[in-house]
Image (cartoon, rainbow, N blue to C red; front, side, top):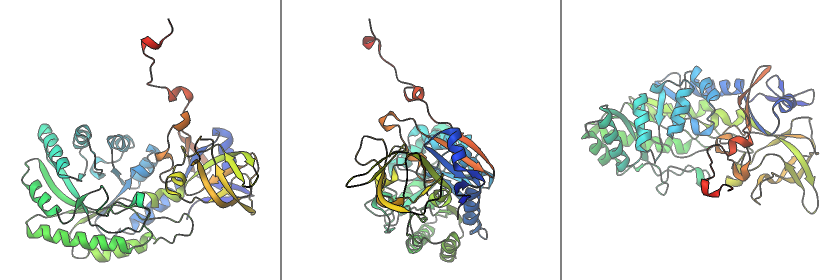
Length: 419
């Protein structure tokens, strides 16, 4: 369910006509629906309302502080993977006690900032990282609340690049080795063990991998109990998928029912880290058709490229498309490509897309997750604007970058300056 719809032949986001936004801010731009974001959060979080839990939005999926503030206002926390994401979450007003910090490569400076902020816990992913946390916590004279990310070696049945729970993936500690790591941590003066963490991948469209990993983690928590280690928090990560094309992912209620059934007998607060399922279908990328090139193959050339939306080039991902300035039922097979000097610069390749004309506005759907957050300045292209629709109003929540900002921080050394 989302709030993008046609009214009088023009695509709207909530009550705002998308061509009106394009005229005001230019193209390309990302557009999010506040109503859809709110609805998705409430549907997901509400599915777990009858048990102790905390929903921590995966900041990496869509990191604009306005969206983080919206989720925080609904009671949400944040799942972060960098010092920059910590800064964003705090700037957005997220309660530090609802922030969990994952990731395999936390620096000492990032660990220090997290402990100083008083976050809920650090998800530890290696023995050496544990040592680094102990050293920083001792320096600050605090107890570091930690969970260990265990790798259950479960196939999430998703794209290889977004699989994180197999033995061959870089994430977490192998579950068969993790008990000893917990025993090591128990002996450290500045480490407070509070949880177990697990995350097996992204864009999962079946419940069974979640259940399988939870069963393994549940048995693991039992083994810890036998060693006298009590776990109060179980972080199950995120990964629930959305419909991009023909996928049939479970609804939050179905997912929650399976998790709650498997959680019986565990006296733990559940941490959930949804990202894509909250924002994916709540955002679109709006781009303008610059040219049509027809021949043995048809190309629709638009002003957004792989630097703006990397998923099609990176994963071969499918994004549905609609015309925003007019309703068009006719489709044609074409490549939708951008201005980047790479053959891999495409938003759609050999897909059925709307029969577009020069000057049309094309809405690239389901682009709210890993869209802007993965964008770059490749080919020295300023990053696009981000806009949030709220009822009959829209708000620019990130201004389009300027060319001057592209070179901000760069300098020409004296020996290269003209004499």
